[in-house]
Length: 377
Image 1 (cartoon, rainbow, N blue to C red):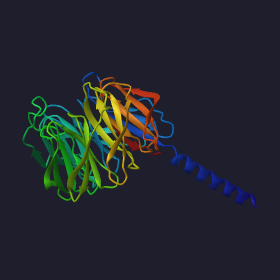
Image 2 (cartoon, helix red, strand yellow; image 1 turned 90 degrees about the vertical axis):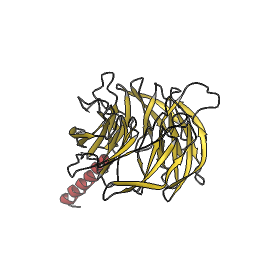
Image 3 (spheres, rainbow, N blue to C red; image 1 turned 180 degrees about the horizontal axis):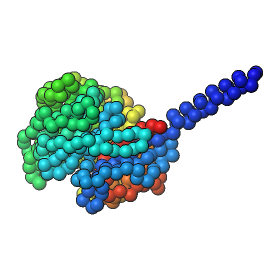
Image 4 (tube, helix red, strand yellow; image 1 turned 45 degrees about the horizontal axis):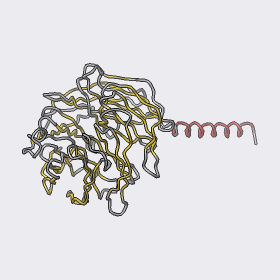
């Protein structure tokens, strides 16, 4: 072989090695939304490696924002949207550089109601949907070509109340969930014990009533966060006030209840309040957060029926687990503990679904929401 051919072979090998190393770096940006009551700067950005579970120090943070709690990432991952969870609530738009992790605020619009606590982006990247807990409403905001947002084009206010006089005196929209078909929208309302259903027209951004218009939960349940199984056939809601998860068959925009199961071990009799819910990407396990009991509940999912079987509760090593996430590799679970000011990392057993503390954590004031964006070079 000639010297020239040897050099070309070496160069090809190095290029392949370089590409393989780059593709396996596992680097993501971790975005954290917070309450700013105790001195938080608002939103924080860290680097997270999915191979090692290592965090970087803060590489970016915002300033001057009040309670940018819940976050949503655009499908192209170039833009991030956050609520401003205040009376007279707002929605903020940011550009995001996935090479540097830099956030640049673009603009702010009204959320169309008080206390926005949840935000979603539709799959076309043209519409932001925000749920207003205090206002008992949801709003649709258009996304402009540059990624900024326009004023709400539609605000729908729910009506009614339920049996818990202190928590269900009026509607309290708690999340806005867009189904994989980008048409069905499910809106759990804690205040009226209903999952209200809508149809989204992705061309106009207009919402119309679903069929049925709502699915009733148990009185006093307080439906909060909602997720759809990767197979698209089952759906689940976690209920804040009665500490349960309800499983549904999902077809043609309708939910049919088939099981309700406690999030607590049988011998626990103390106070509790549920928050977040997620399913592993393989569809085998469902996780939910128990605030005040301060554990993450773990269930297995029957792959034929979608019903849940309780496995265990894992301590979150902190107080008031608000939001949590399974990282893109499925190896890790990150839990945002609002009242102990830490994000705790757990190793996830993909076969058993169980969680093991790693001893790694991020200290940040009042974390609420966690999102990840793939880093690029």
